[in-house]
Image (tube, rainbow, N blue to C red; front, side, top):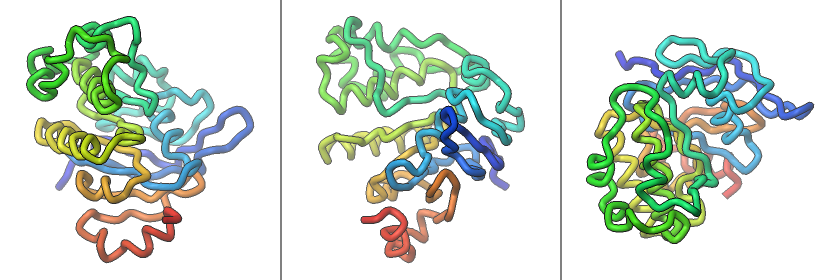
Length: 234
């Protein structure tokens, strides 16, 4: 039986008086790549932020390996082994690639060493002395993902990693995600591009109005393509 690593049960979240998540419920098994698909404003990014404790007003249950996280602050949540790569990437302009990679603290044993990261991302080794914001969009995204691998986290939350990138770079990001899965990472991925998602994910949760309305295994994607297009409005 697959082992559930992350589980959300009836999670609600608010920004001020705006009720964004309305009973978000789903799970991710260890070693899976799972996507949250949905239109803009469906609650996908808020779900990521709620998992990380970055939404102050939330209730329900969020467990990692059976440990309840809902009442913990974000720094304590990270120490349980979750790392978040936000859509805006957060690359520091004044630091070179190597310094950007060294910024996050080690939170758990098992984080990758710099040489291991450079083996996974050889172009970052070549650009290690370059300022972070002098990199291309694709290289910045790879740097943002690579940076969280030092922390020791085994569950990676990736928010729109292909947004605004050229198709050839999107393909590289896909290769990176598949490679990370082979290295034992579990990945929860927010995506709007289900064509890309279908190349990397094991399962897809469709999010609408702050809750999961459907789950589609990747093997059943073709049979559900028309339904998915209706969900996503494409």
